[in-house]
Amino acid sequence: MKNVVSISNARKELPKMMKELQKNPETVYVIKVRDETIAEIRSAKKQVEPGEAVRKLIHLRQKVYPLIKGKTEEPISRKVKNYLYGKENG
Image (cartoon, rainbow, N blue to C red; front, side):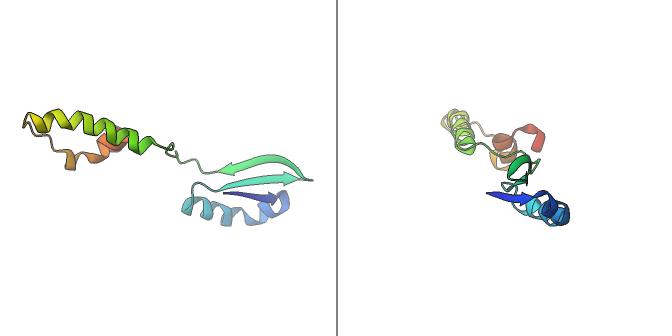
């Protein structure tokens, strides 16, 4: 969601804008001076690309299926974050 803000309001409302970005990382503030866009403020948090979770779940399913078929166990429930988000978040 984009919000258009004048430069003077951005100066006044900066703390409020930062709190909103923490709550809703997809929010974008467009800063304008005399109807000209000069900046955008958005969250620095990495946003998940559309379809990324599905791709990771399909990859996980392909990886796990041979294990189920061969009756070899791997503790997926304990490592689900590693499988979905990579080992750095585990």
